[in-house]
Image (cartoon, rainbow, N blue to C red; front, side, top):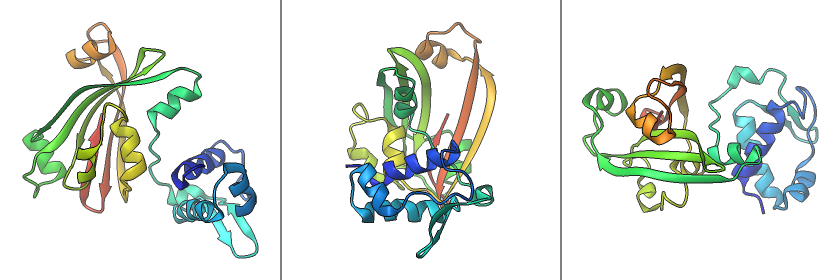
Length: 215
């Protein structure tokens, strides 16, 4: 049985991939419930969250229609790395390289949580496809905002996947750049020093409270 979060991601994928075109009426709740093997209320919840993002328009008795101009209310969509890798046909594996509670650098603390003097959770992790490095992850998590993560076995499930499934956010910041591999990336990815890398920096927030910052 699919969860509302999994159904939401699949519906958004179909909209983004133009499986359902802008302006098109998508299948009804009962049909989607049969497809995903879940209760109609689960589909309803997923569709309502997508409607809140402005990607679909819902009208009673008229069904749910893909929005003609969804970019007006576009939000940050965070991919689950495991799913990205598995869609390529490769076997996924996640390796937690480092995990500790510590204070972030002073400049970062002033930027992210100036009133928060608590330690954050600092992680370094590697996502592998067919046992070859795919993504190296350097992440800070504000445990004051998501304390439940302290009880999670992050060797079993990646912080990326757990946060997407359990830490809703109200806004996010994203920056993409080209960079050169530093010693930490060199060691994790098995690359020569100064190799060219694609770097993605992302922060998610709950109102004014940082949830996580990841590179």
